Length: 261
Ligand SMILES: [Zn+2]
Image (cartoon, rainbow, N blue to C red):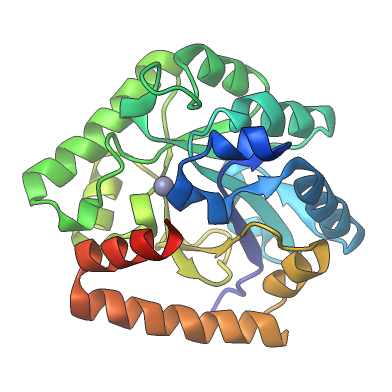
């Protein structure tokens, strides 16, 4: 069995001050981190000896001897273009940005088509996060297929390159959705199940969610499967997954939204 050595960190938006925090949708704010925290996370990961890899390394089984980090960002918040891309490029690093394609050039505070072209030109990976951000697992097969196909082709039209990666909105996906994604030509399928991933394994990629206010040492603990924090979050995630299965994604999301409002 290959060793799970890849930590795929799941970021969303970043913000500089309270005004830029207010531009982030309320339910997404718990996952937004300050620019200063983001930089502190990167510095301590680097000092701890992690090698930062780019999108394609997920599929590279040669890499499984080293401790690796892949940075991912969900939703396509404009801070991805304005801050994260510029900071990463200056450090010679790359991130993988999952874009909700219906929001391109439509919603303020989300990436425009020009932003995506600049991000790609700066060496960033661009993947799909569906068209509408509705949960693909809850759709009938025809709608699921069209969300996965249309978001891919829209990004390919904008960028002029093949889109290889997807992250499912809300992390909600079943075996049917993964199968459709692979059929459509996605090579790397990211969920939001908690845990480490083995580079070269093309099953659903587990990720480590980064939340607002997490210190650099908390992020390092999250990356360390033998830390108490990592084990605790793994158990809590299993409980949440069971609750979602019992009450359904829609009800779970409504409860979550009420609690974060
Ligand atoms: Zn999302």
